[in-house]
Amino acid sequence: MNPSLEQDAQLIWQTGVKAVGSQRLVENTIHCDSNELCIGPFRTAWADIRKIVVVGAGKAGAGMAAGLLAAIPSDLAKAKSLSGWVNVPNDCAQSLQSIHLHPARPAGHNRPTPEGVIGSHAIVQRVTYADSRDLVVCLISGGGSALLPLPATGITWQDKAHVTDLLASHGFPIQDINGVRRALSAIKGGGLARACRAGQLVSLILSDVLGDPLDVIASGPTVLNTALHTAQNARRILLQLPNAKSSVPTSIWNLLDENDQHAPVGQDSARQDPVGRTSVGDYAQVTNIVIGNIDTAVQAAAEHARQLGYQVKIEPIAFPQPTADEAGRQLAQRITPDASPHCIISGGEPVVHLVDDQQRGRGGRNQQLVLSALCEIAEMPNSGELGQFCLLSGGTDGEDGPTDAAGAWITESMIELAHSANARSFQQINDAYTFFEKSDSLLITGPTQTNVCDLRVLLTRS
Image (tube, rainbow, N blue to C red; front, side):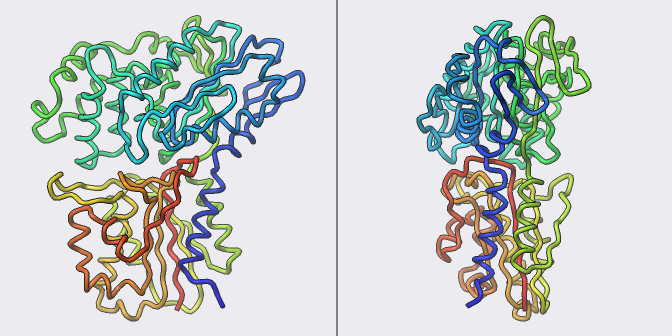
């Protein structure tokens, strides 16, 4: 019996996610022999290293740390006193030799916590105590902004969490949210690099932001050459909120006023050489290396779809990203009856406009996108003539909003359910999880140890 479109869609999606497995990406980036350590373009003699300090934060932190330990022989790691601390979601906090994985927030709770602040203090302490003979390796992945909270003096983590929630609920893109986070942080926007007293700081970055802007991924803790006037940029963004002056805490406005005319200390003296290394004053020389992104996942998924016999089209990523509702409508309109099997692969990270707390149900941007597509299809006059289809959308990190699902999928068999259960009413209150729970079409994977935005698969055949 031929596999169903639903099975094929899941296999294609899983292949894309596997291609950006964080442990494998790190192992492939680090190479060493008895004389030299190579991390991407960075090379150094073992004799020049006193000790190796590993720090970092992100949803892929556990896999990245495991990859680093697998790539460096245990005798060399022991000789260089390799140790570390990485902030990860609670359900990723496994036991690793010599690297502590600190549970910094609950699963599905993408906002700062007191535990995250404790972990961030520990990370800063480690890089501050390093000296010029040491190598610091920083492991950064998506989710790092919430997992690496260290508020600037004068504000609390609750202030930052409140503002982040405000921006997210009003559909601000991640670039704007992280622009505000940088201005309110002692560790983001290059703050970790400025605190580092090691001779070398190498940052391995798994990108969850389209286009891989280093200052946006986890809010750029090791990126020194960011825009100087971060306070001005943050104020510009916050003023777009309804009732901005009253809804944003006074402590934040005071901090922005105080820092308005000042770049972070040392930032304006940053120097970057042609291969991406940056140094500040007498402190660490920084090398930032992107080891994977959504393009890696999309290409792997597309290749697997071809192997399964589909004619494949890769959708170009739109800038700016549409909302989840609009992205779902656009994909629904791509479904047409055709004799041969077709596959459309796309990646992205759309925003969701949330209704207010009292009305809001459960869901995430992938579930919202898929439900929007189903509503659009169900309202088409020719919906019964579309043939077979399956649309699957999932977060490559295994998370989608504050739920236990990575996303959801739909098939032509669900059109009737969309009518009978009034799917549009669920979409309008961001309650896609409840709808898909009824139809048993939630994509539930658990933590994937990676994070490179969302991956979407649309399959059609007559």
